[in-house]
Amino acid sequence: MLMKQYSFRVKAVAGLLIVLESLVLIGALGYFVYVKSQSYGLGAGVSRINKENVVFRPGERLKFFYEWEAHQTIVYERSWLPQVFETKTNSDGLISPVDYEPSKPPDVYRILAIGDSFVEGPFVEPGEAYPRQLEALLNASDACKAVRTYEVLNLGVGGYDIEYAGARLLSKGIKYNPDVIIWFLKNDDFIERSDINFIREQKYIEFVNNTLGGDIEKFAPYKKWLNQIGDTKNVSQIIHGVVVGEQVEEEAHKLYFKEQNDMINEVASVIKLPIILATFSDTDAIFKARMRLWANYHENMHFFDKIPALKSGDETFDPHDGHPNSSGYRVIANSLFDELVNNGFVCRD
Image (cartoon, rainbow, N blue to C red; front, side, top):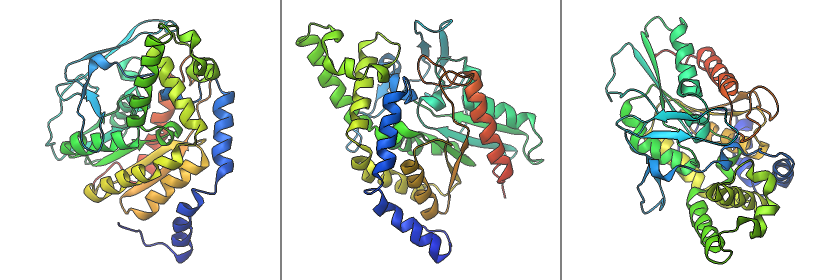
């Protein structure tokens, strides 16, 4: 494991963060209270993937790993949407209208955007997801004289956790020879573990269908986590909301730290390119500490937590579901654009 050349004090603080994982109960409890008080606070946790658009690639380590199928039309349709939104995958299963060659010309600067649905960009027009907005900002700028074109490849997949995003980066993303990687993380990426989700969700769905006759209203956890679930009648989405709520209540993030840490270490050891761990300014303190720890120990990782918080009820956060609207994605894109420019991530050395 690589470690940056920091002062003794910084190294000591970084080392103590692991110990503090088991002691910082206030932050965890505070987040639990926040989730209970906010109708749609977890964002991507409310929306399950469209299984007809994905291919499952189970492995020894991740038993339910999945990715978008190639040449798929993904339809986002909800009762609260003003219209039906669609996006398409290219020949490699990336959210994109075009294909990308793994090799790139010397005057093309390539950025990989990885993460869950906040990267994928559901419920908005394809060009409004943050990767496309960031790409437009970069190409409209004069950020680097040596770059003719900036490309921001969208590797986001709804429902991903840290392990799944890392696996997708290693198996599919790195072949595109990126210059920079932006790994967008938020609270639920630390709380949820997708392999656990799938097992528990299947168990609950079978119980509702076989024991309760398909009546979700009789399922006791449904009423308990009603605020968590949001405005949906879809049984699989409701069950997913229940499972996420239970993981919050169980403080499951403590159990998942080893698997998350192992994936981060693997990514950092294989990929020597700059990796920006980006998050919202109001991400829970315990998870920010985890990201700082990774950035401190890995030479190629950088921590950025200055993306303004998106709140339900204003002009940036969809109040029905918890995902950003087009304005919210613009806030994310603008913040990341400033970070890239201000820290020299727009030109090759």
